[in-house]
Length: 412
Image (cartoon, rainbow, N blue to C red; front, side, top):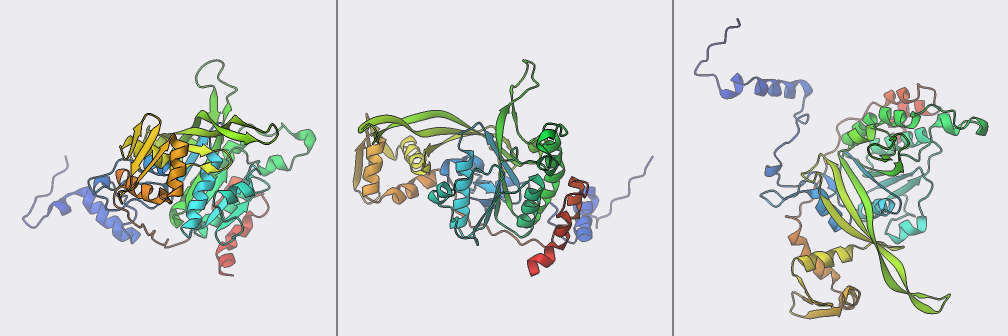
């Protein structure tokens, strides 16, 4: 039987605690205390490093509950981590991604958009505020195959690009497939795409963490062929690994389409046409705040993007800032003037005429967030060894060896 050492008066609780002793020793061995993760969210005086999405309802949803200092843990896309957004078609996934790109660029950040689908509308992106012609802020990549996209992601992450968007993870085609003859299509190994992602995700995660890059990946929902009438009849593209590596997984669903009076030049009449959609965001997995399982709603105007002004108006109504009497909306501005409108469209017109939307935003924000804190990410101390990328394709994919010279390429 092991004998317990005698305790002397000089012994402190720290020296008798094996966990504290090991922690102090590991700080010395690793040369830094950064390996330890801060677990006390209640004591946070500033939010975790993050990127505001530009959508108030989404930032509020992701942020979680405020602590005693009024600080939300992560009111935006977390830096150094992976966020996955998935849903059916027309659920606003790409629109949300482009809106985040515009928000990052407007704040002076950099974005690389990996368009595996070859479907991004440059004119629509520009209309949402993405600086499509400024290559110092935004780069659109359309890789020939999955592996070329891997190389792009790694290089961009290791260079310290603020945001990398992957649209979408299920549309990427492995080189083994893209190089096939037409007659051989359909003969590829089952699950090849999922296997490639499973091998690459740990490397991508490590690069993002090292350089504090935010990864925003989009996936589609497809009908599952193997349920045999039991269980969920749908599946999310990309394989099972995409359930485990993201820190934040969000499902988007269009729950309603709304009509509006629109002039039709062909018929020379004013008609009711689908003009906007109501999108529900549900947090399926969250490692950055207490938002697990929570839901929020935002709005999209077709052809124009996310309608954040409407979100502010709806929030203002919910908190009694804007008074609602029948169809009439009334807001008493901080300067004492009053804005009224019959119906939300008319009310918005009056707010716009008074150039008062920013004033309304400033009144609403304190109801949703704590003290504003500018988060400055720490610089990474070292680069990531990416030679293990060759394991993804057995070392046979042309061009992977070029990644060995990444540091020299950046210096040049």
